[in-house]
Amino acid sequence: ANHGCRRAQPVARRAEPDAPAAMVRHNNVIPNQHFHKTLWQDHVKTWFDQAARKKRRRLARAKKAAAVAPRPVGLLRPAVHPPTIKYNYKLRQGRGFTFAELKEAGIKKKEALTIGIAVDHRRRNRSAESLQLNAQRLKEYKAALILFPKKRGKPKAGDSGKEELSAAQQVTMKTVLPMPVIEKGEEAMIITTEMKEDNVFHKLRVTRADYRLFGVRQRNRLAAALKD
Image 1 (cartoon, rainbow, N blue to C red):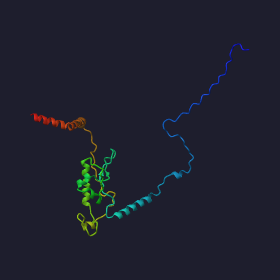
Image 2: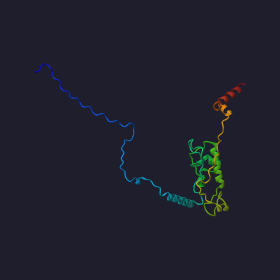
Image 3: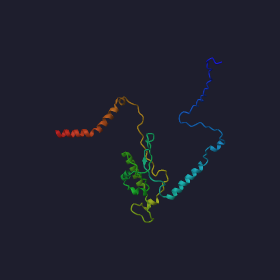
Image 4: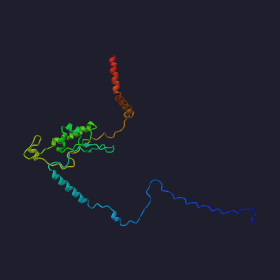
């Protein structure tokens, strides 16, 4: 009999989904290792042709030298400083000489390539030292240059004489002229008391101010002289 009490109905609870697996953090490669590769010997790089390659390169250089003889194997190139602080204390071969360097050495732009001098129309001289260094390099080359006539027995103005032609030897070095030697910098020294007491920062600031205010001071000086 029902005495007014409602029977509790069983409540079906929804099953909670499983917590998602932890995701890989950051943009890393998804681990997918497979260790079933066989015959690792097929993936080893060898260099058994090193001696043959060396011989092939040497023969190619000799063939090229014989083809261009008696001219040098390469062009004369400038001495330049490599970029970045790590390497700029050295000297290496550049792409070509600037127009300013050719002008300083008294060589025309169109004439340069005809006598074995490389020209680079993009390079600029940022200092007088580099300009003088490469201009001197060009002058040395020009002094040692032997010009063969285009046609045998018909020399033109500027061509070398018979004695020079007979004594000519082909230059097969990596550089037509040896690279100039850089002067070594100052050697390490003990810091003295005078060096410690000297205020270099103040000197630099004063020098910069003098350079910056040169025009203003000169104008004021002229204005004061006119008033007097």
